Picture 1 (cartoon, helix red, strand yellow):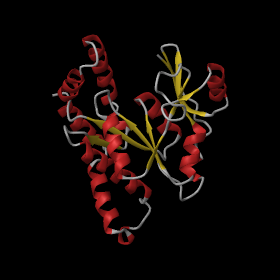
Picture 2 (cartoon, one colour):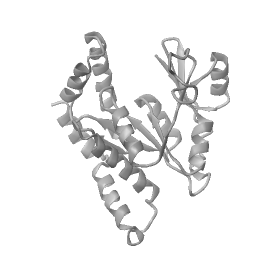
Picture 3 (cartoon, helix red, strand yellow):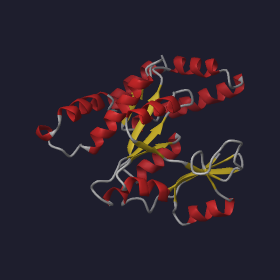
Picture 4 (cartoon, one colour):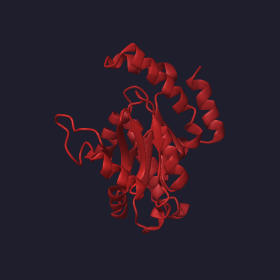
Length: 242
């Protein structure tokens, strides 16, 4: 798999206006429950989901602009060259990426935008766009992750083994994220609430403590509990793989 990124033109997004929404980058291994948690998050508050672009052929039931933006390969690569892709990846002969313009328009309107993306792309966005809120979502431990993948019953043993190997590489990158949210079994609403608290805290982080509303104060405490430090990341990894 060949990964490339072009983010040179995104550095000033944070300064478009002070009422701009937050770009929220969510990563996590397969089986972490990202899709379920995001559904709960969208029920909790108004967020916008960044729809990816792809060069692959639409499948039955897929809708343009909802499931993907379907582009011809030449058009996709032209957008890469012009800096109109925040990040992109080539996989199995097709390209997948994040269009800059829809994300920027939603941010300008004050919406918080969720970008669900794998670790390599996420870390490249962080490097060029430090204003993004980086959140890593995962089950409490590796054994639980393995059990979830097996219980889904949708993949062969070979694919599950491959996903678990990839997960090992992804999880050790947790210290490069801003926040860690643990998605316990049947606690998706709690995980979604934690993510919402993190985003609201980041949006209001320049407010003086004495000027905070009680609601924001509570959210800030919840966000702080999910904040990643080198020490907390080390402790987490020791427990995760024990």
